[in-house]
Length: 89
Image 1 (spheres, one colour):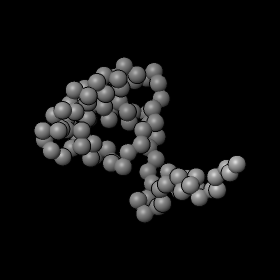
Image 2: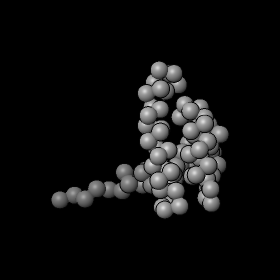
Image 3: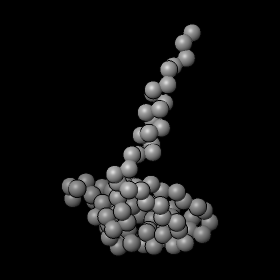
């Protein structure tokens, strides 16, 4: 990731942290990512703030992982949407 672009996202990362902090123990979250938690610090650009976010998100959480060789569930249903014949008038 370009370091110049990375610093543009840091204020948004802090806002995301504030949101997670405010909602901690008040709401449930469902997040999806194609990156594992170990990769988030590099991706988000601030390992310390990312650790704080992950600490709150992963506390009392259930993590579901899928085999990367498995077909994407999202793409499977997307394909079925476009394979069905449309309504004709």
